Amino acid sequence: LDAGGSLRTSGTAGTAVNVVSGNFFFTAQPIGVIDGVDYQYTGDVRKIDAKNMRARLDAGDVVLLTSVGYGASGESYYVLTADLAAKCAGALGASKLVWITAGQTIVSRNTGEILQSMRLSDAKAFLHHYGVDWRDRKMKSAPPLARLKEISSNLTHVDMLDERVGHATASTLRLCRHSVTALEAGVRRAHILTPSSGDLLRELYTCDGAGTLISRDMYDSVRPAEDGDVMGILDLIQPLIDKGILVSRSHLQLQAELDNAYVQVRDDVPVACGMLIPYGLDHAEISCLAVNPRYRGKGRGDIMLTYLERVAVTSGIHNVFVLSTQTMQWFQERGFNEVDLESLPESRQAIYNHRRGSKVYMKHLRSLRDVDAEEHFLGQKL
Image (tube, rainbow, N blue to C red; front, side, top):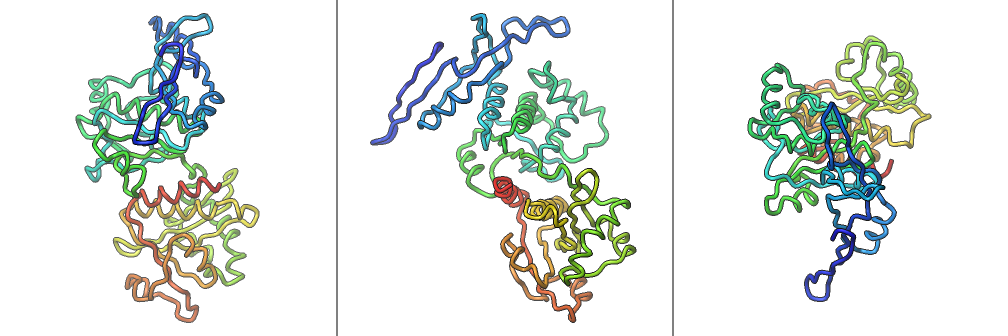
């Protein structure tokens, strides 16, 4: 419907769905002339009428948007549907934005399987790898496939992600780019799925999902610890050492374990810290978890914990454990279960302090999606 209207469709017995559609939910503006190219009637989204759209959604209606928008002068412009979807999702503060591709998937170069999840920062790095700037107004579509192959052939290093030949299509990159736009505007998660039967339900209602999840980054201020952080880490853990909660560590011990340490910083000063110490191929100990008292109660401990869990899974480690004398309940509330000392790797059992008598708690992480679910729950609390 060009001007607007509604259509009531019948569903199962006793149910009906009201679909509201029209051009009145957003206004458009011309892209104009860029680098000497006149885009004529190709437009950009100018403004979203989120209040009106939200009112219809709250009334139980389905809002169906068109790709034609009107400008202030009455001219009509074609707007990319993906651009419109991303900006509407941002304006509405949507929890999820779901894309259905024509069958393209993003595949992990390491495993050969569909990439289950990416952080927002990973998605930006992924686009950068293919020469796409998500902020570039001229990028109304991604580079053509021939250009992608040219770019890929000139690169000798890929940090984390790559797409298999044949899957590196312009449309997939465009959806990734619009996902980044939506997440930067406040949307919590974007999902990229194929149209296969059952994939949408599996993506939304199972831990492993069916496509690629791109989620906002809670970890912008978390990084590997550096030499200059040692004194800050000591300041964080000393009060807990004095209370007997943490094991005492000297400056030299921290320096030796620095490769396993991570910090969350504010103005480059550590306000939280934690360690992930590998034992064997599939176990790691989470230790030295501490938060500055001024910042407790703000989810920073949870952020550090889920960050360490993400590092573990990314490294191929699926069993993480903690040794605790006083903070057992906090870890139990986050999915850790008490186990016998014999459940620890033999190398860790050999250095267990029997005099201290710490209890052992372990957590099994099946995949990054397990961590994603925790982050989603945590994001709603923060």
